[in-house]
Length: 341
Ligand code: AHM
Ligand code: MG
Image 1 (spheres, protein in one colour):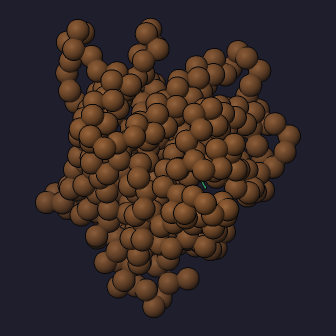
Image 2 (cartoon, protein in one colour):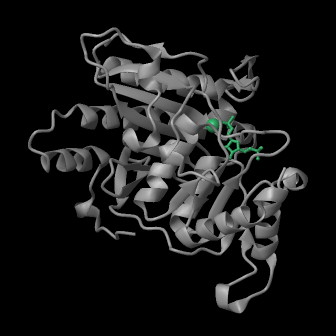
């Protein structure tokens, strides 16, 4: 981490402008979009921190596209992020976990399409465990004189122009990439600013932590069962047994993986035949971050960011983290492929 003296602090706003100035032809629109997300994140962070005293915990009463009970903070976060994007007139459409269809904004000629998971890890909201927001930004590819179509949003993850997350944990952290490495910021609540804490995060090539919901063990693919047993075996040379850590908020589990290395897995299972996590607003943006930090992300067969999406809410299995760990689990999956569910 960069250790800065107090008079050498760089705020998110300053950092974004400095980055933009390195590209003389830049219009400043992407910078504006990132600043808008930063502002919404501060408002969400404030609300998350006082959730217990403002009657915003609990269920809102409806269910979302996935049939899950919608919580009030999810709705609040969704509203804050969408209105921040609406205000700056740069984004033509938003796809959010909390909305069944594409949300077309007033700026029909806006250059950007934004995917959001406004509040990820919602089962952790009521129990004061870390949650997060995730964003993924694409350039609209169709010509601007053509009508905006829902399909304009179906681009593979390799086309993301920026992505990131905000983790509401013991502190609030914002991490983003525009494809030139990963930068990390920490919110200083006393001045209401995100302060740069690391310009270029790199995750270890190999980590000693595995992260998976072991409750579903019985319905995992055989190769995965064998890999987790391998993680638990003793071998001093490869630092095994590994430690198990699972928070149940993908943002928090990926944040730990980014810093400490290791692997996070959400496989397909009998309960979730296509995996649980959503390709467009969970897996692609977090894969972009992890790859930019030197890691890997796959669905077991294919690089996550190369999957051609067919639907905005589609799900995928994911194996993501340090290169060595992901490569090893893929070898296990390959070896036991025939015998798998
Ligand atoms: P959510 O977007 O409804 O919160 O669901 C996604 C979350 C991820 O953050 C987390 O990795 C996963 O669901 C946990 O699922 P499970 O409880 O099945 O382990
Ligand atoms: Mg989510």
